[in-house]
Length: 134
Image (tube, rainbow, N blue to C red):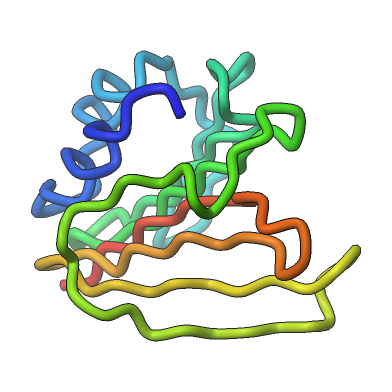
């Protein structure tokens, strides 16, 4: 994975600060949509190992969601993750997500809900998400 410390640094942000997230990931966000209470941003050419980078940010409160979809060609497995001690994760298994179902490890890290989602059989990392809630 590019820099495992980046995820830890993102998880320590008290709010989804677009500039800080862009700086940590080395990307430039482009606004893709706006709704009455939120803005959506994407990255035109995400750096490896990401296939897609999206940020959803509330307008009036420190709430947001960062989705880092992993490029399947990157071949990052569950066992490749070196995580700090976030404690025991809550597991969520969904066998209905193609092609083989997913298992998601959920951690509470301060103001952030941090999730790592991978495939159940090939054990490949699919996405990492960080959700800030006030």
